[in-house]
Length: 199
Image 1 (cartoon, rainbow, N blue to C red):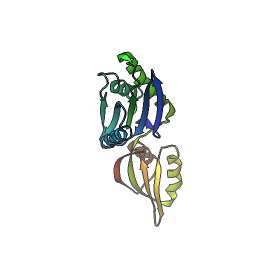
Image 2 (image 1 turned 90 degrees about the vertical axis):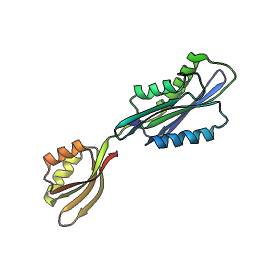
Image 3 (image 1 turned 120 degrees about the horizontal axis):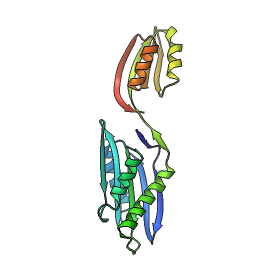
Image 4 (image 1 turned 90 degrees about the horizontal axis):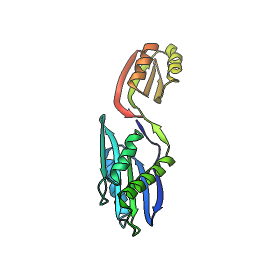
């Protein structure tokens, strides 16, 4: 899954109308809705707060958009298309418009909402996330070097190490990488503590 590393914003002015794009990383549809509420409060005096978001929940993509009073298809839909074309998820774009008194027409609106959204996205760092499981692994001391060597090539996060009679490690690792580790290392015990964590 591709998303942004941190929240970003950008602003453009088109024929005296000010467009402010705020892009947020969100982890659920509920968080996306709360973010929309916050922006509506922050820019309560604006004419429009249009949005588009894609959130992955339980393996399904939830897509929503709103033109918030702009002519149908001129704001939210073009913003959603940007997210889909760039294959981004767990992200919301909210564009606030302060009307400058000059009508832009449907083509002008689509261009303005698209331009300010892309302007903000161009400032953001795109990162790739994957679903991992939290594993508790027991192994003998003579296997730890081989285990660490194979682990170095993988995206992983070690939560804790305990050195008792055996070595006990709690780790975040994808299911696929766990299969590779098990094929290359002798592990006494592997327990899944938690599934489907985004790393």
